Image (cartoon, rainbow over all chains, first blue to last red; front, side, top):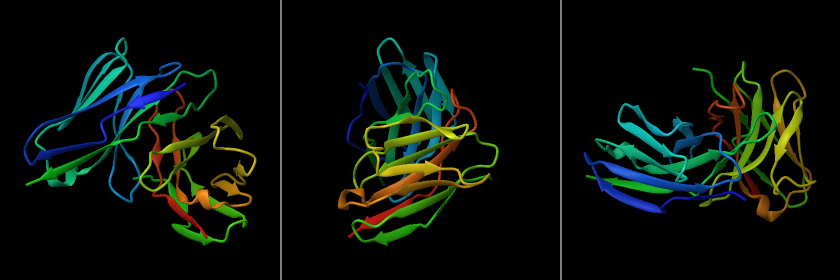
Length: 113
Length: 114
């Protein structure tokens, strides 16, 4: 089975740094994705990790440890517009093409001034 | 920037009616997906489609659901006999590659079943 866990809610203030954790247990592993979803909108891609380590992309970084089944998304210099849900998603290994992403429940981040 | 487009943006239907949701994936993408998100809940995988056939489907994707690529551009999701619990936002997504590529999502079609 597939299980992806992340905190339900987090709060932070403008300019701060926040780390959103994700743990997963899946039948296989072929990459971990982070998406941002504003209320009533579509998920938009933030980052992708398939090897262990840190991937940095501007104010956003994502880390993966495959042996621990663990990832985090780090957001620096928080802005009010970063208030959104952050979705952790795993692509489990499959012999078939077009393997789907399985999403966690998402972490709702509220940024205050 | 290329994008996934979905129609309609919102559809209201009576229980038991058939609904077709339409999607135009990004033109050079080969892998297509449908997801749904019930209000306040997580994004759930329904089905993936590659090379004109279903490559994967979830337990949610039962006999009342079907997908089709009727021409070179559209990708449709049909719900044969809608139930109240089918009320959700339905997202279409596409990806260029199946193994490593990220999914690009459309803006969604909100389905309300009365």
